[in-house]
Length: 114
Length: 113
Image (tube, rainbow over all chains, first blue to last red):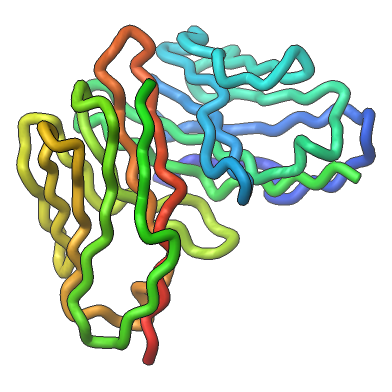
């Protein structure tokens, strides 16, 4: 398996633009997580899906952030409009709830909003 | 509210020494605790996962222990090598209706050649 795949790996955009981050979880995993990592706050859970259904989005900072999981093999995290304080590394992780509950992380998307 | 703390934030150790990284959590109601490694500019790699019913897990030179009642976990690295240099994070899966995964901020480990 290729592991969790994220795209793009790097994104530089101007304030006010829409940003879409993409994630393909490991095949067969039924839980998917979006995290944000910054130096100041560390790793924060934004939202997680179970069987494509959003279970907890209490970590989503504000209405500018939205996430979807239209099917078991694809998820998006969208920021509209983007702001400089959104600059961070965004990680996607997946997990099989029928096994050890171990999370597997993607390589992350480094977002810079100027 | 569950809080996960890792102290120290950074650690430098000469090559070959054994070392212990610490993780503490405030709420003992957890499903499991997981240790990760993160190299600069990279994602997280899972090292060990300890279920709440377990006391320890071992993988090669790594040994992780869990004392749920005291809210502590340690990651023991034997015979450290320069390649062990990375940031080590612990995360707990909370046993409440939120079912969240809470991360510590990590310990940045540097092994001196």
